[in-house]
Amino acid sequence: MLEGTNLFDLGEEELDQLPFGLISVDRDGTIEQYNAYESRLARLSKERVIGRNFFRDVAPCTAVQAFMGRFNLFVDREGDASESFDYVFPFTFGKQYVNITFVRSSKDRRIKILINRYDE
Image (cartoon, rainbow, N blue to C red; front, side, top):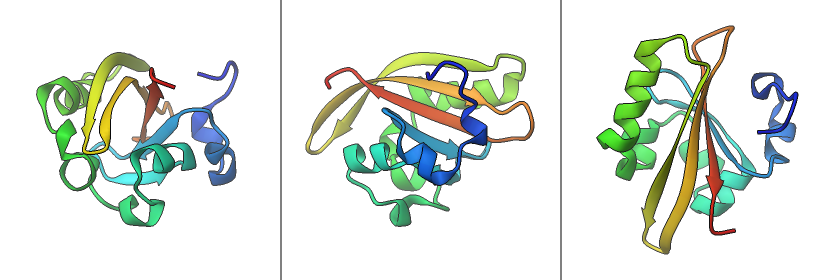
């Protein structure tokens, strides 16, 4: 993550400048923000994903214990500010090996999903 940067204070333009994918969701998984980096690598436009459920509508491959299960535990657990793990997105255009980090806001119920690709 960028040292000293509070991801929850960044505007859309600043989010689009980040060197990694970022998806902001509520605690049910509804997408509120989707940065340009993630849009480009997942090949999904912002317009197509904002307001939709990440696990059910956008990335159903994540509706498994290894991803959504961890997300739900992270949401329910409270306390920890972040959690990271490795994951493989099985896109039809090729697998993407990534490190996922969940980051919770200290001010409200939003969660950022950071996606760092290993193969870039």
